[in-house]
Image 1 (cartoon, helix red, strand yellow):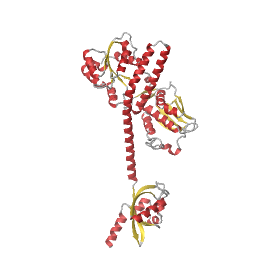
Image 2 (cartoon, one colour):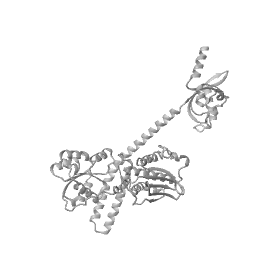
Image 3 (cartoon, rainbow, N blue to C red):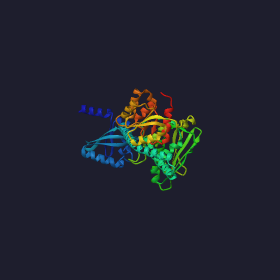
Image 4 (tube, rainbow, N blue to C red):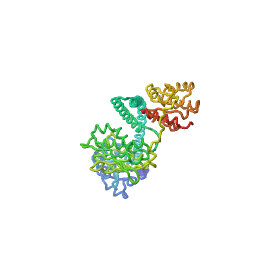
Length: 504
């Protein structure tokens, strides 16, 4: 018997887990581990506590701790043992999650309980980290799927848009009737608006390395407003843009800064949509000593003081499940800081939230100006091969380039283009990037191997440069690209620039 007592005493005293004995009147005994866990230096002080004193007033499920504890004790006494999770409170008032095993036994003829308490803070942190990583992966997979979807939509939509835009441009060049000219202008403007929306969507999902250059801030703002226009308009939000066109350019990646602007506009829209009117959004920019200051201010409810320090934390959101991911502001801050700028939250005049961005100027204002492009010459008489699997695009290019060419041939894919190049000397090849049988990159490689002089005499036409492999190919080769939809003037200028460049 003495040996059994020694074994039990050793297991109780030296156990790494906190072990305590209790009945309905309170604690009976506890080991050293339980004293350390709850922050008591003296066992007598611990034994004077009531079990409810070592718990917060309420448990996470909303039940008062006293009520919930009594229910668990009753169940343990009835069933012999129970395993539960509980939130405890230390002597200093801090709380921690715990796993508790309650085992019923008889002590001096009366029911009692042995409680083994294990701090599971680290386990909870690990579970939260796994959940965070899972959410990150889920969001990444969603963006990848969105990117693939938008790539296909852009390619399919940009082809008919290119036909509309080029035909509207040709009508403007050839029509003499004022009514016809007016119609052509309206058609061209509508096509360009559609094209801008498609480009903005592509910018959101584009997976490519940052490409920084001098940018007009007004263009970045107007791009974000264009893509969110329907949501703003349908929610009755008045938008005021006070971004002067003559501000110095900023230095940055157009797609990334556009995503920041869109995140801020969408956040403002969500804050305003359930508010009584008037609903206002004001975007303004001014020049400051250390760069450009851009503000996005709304007349919404603002951000409560208690969460202001957390709004830029990853995955922190005040929106209900399904309405927000908590990545928008965190991503925006990362982008702005990577550009050498800053983003902060202030109170908007009259209430609401006001996000303030500081962005660096471009190194030289001259960087913002487009490089001069040679004007087409009426005396040019080049032989051009147009390669495109969309007959309407090929026909439009043929009509556009007719004033520059002595001969224009059409090939429906890269394989047919190779056969034509073998039989005819061309000065320039204009090819789509994505085609059946033999696509643009493989056509380029075949021409480079068979006709090295073509290495610098190829222009690619595309409605989708977001695909990683295509984007990498274009950056690697440095070849000119005509993005759909395009105007007749843009196509001619690019052809003249390509033909005016020194031979490779």
